[in-house]
Image (cartoon, rainbow, N blue to C red):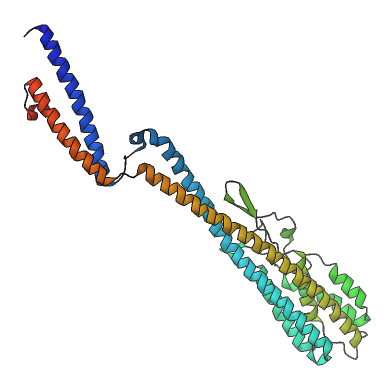
Length: 338
């Protein structure tokens, strides 16, 4: 055989070998698709789809992270709104009790005092609501209980009430207790410098859901409840009189009503933020579904089509082996071990 023919034969064999290698790789890819249902086992096998798949895979954990934040903050806001509702109920109960007492007689004083004392305990408990030790009404200082000192609170009021019983000066008493600071009312000193609490719920939105225990509505209710709980009806040995007591209860009534209004306003504001968070969560869920569907479209193989193409390729590969055998005078077995 001439050298030219040898070169030509070698070229044919080389070309046919390359063609067989390509067909075998295609067959392997189709076999994997038929077995796993995935287009490829890694990004390199996705070709032009690799970049969009990378981008979509990067979006998934971000959206899921926002959803985790939403779940966490929704749980917190639900507890906070429940607490605000109970605090408002305490205030309304006090208002009703004072109004009943004012309309009737001093014989209801002990009952009003008991309602106020129990209500004060409820308010203190609600302000110290927490999840896993993170206090909900403490702002950014969430590791510190916002209501800190019941003893100091009652002592401060009792000192002023004793002075009132001795002098009958109702104006001096109300001025003093209205001037009490948050710490005088038993609240944590750290609330004054505690920052806001926020959570990121999507790429562009941070929701501020801060409600601190030193808010004016809470302070007003603590004032009214503590005053009523600790103030006895004046006796014969006191300078203060029955009318002085009634005036004092009227002042407590006004303070309690104001506190209830402020707490209800706070609750409505928080409910609005809860609705905002829920709406964004619904959108995130929709976005996550879109991302997952796009990923599925790009990465999921049609196994039926893969099997059909694989069968056709096997036929083509068998024919190519036969051609190679003829060209190289090698058997299929020898070629595969070549």
